[in-house]
Image 1 (spheres, one colour):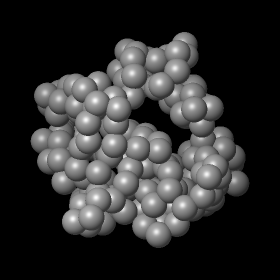
Image 2 (tube, rainbow, N blue to C red):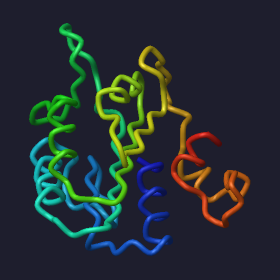
Image 3 (cartoon, helix red, strand yellow):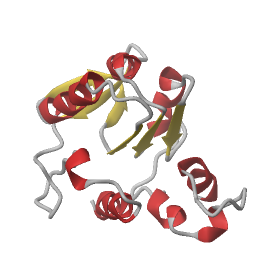
Image 4 (cartoon, rainbow, N blue to C red):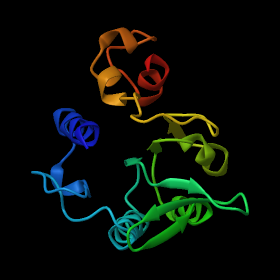
Length: 166
């Protein structure tokens, strides 16, 4: 939870408007708009798909919801239901954006990588498809605020640069 809050803080520090961010969590925080359940996540994805503004950047950060089933389909598991990665990919296909970054944290999060790859998408996973660790030591915010991660020396740490630093 602390990593999600620090990621949210970083978005705001970078100039994102809080009203343009949906933040769901199991706990009450200053930012939380409700539970991180399937209903709220679907509503948020639909909101992003319905917004046809050009040149917008979309960043989605999900932690500890993924798991594979017996048919090798990967799902995000929520308290009120599940969503397949292929359904998420369909939402992404319906979105208008200049760049989409999807950050998935948690054990075996790399299972989503290949299924969501596409042009103008950065898919970042904290672990490989067969890796598991509790706690997940990956903390992208740590590297987003570390100037050493700015490998191209342009004065801005990108999500991809932060991923490589982590």
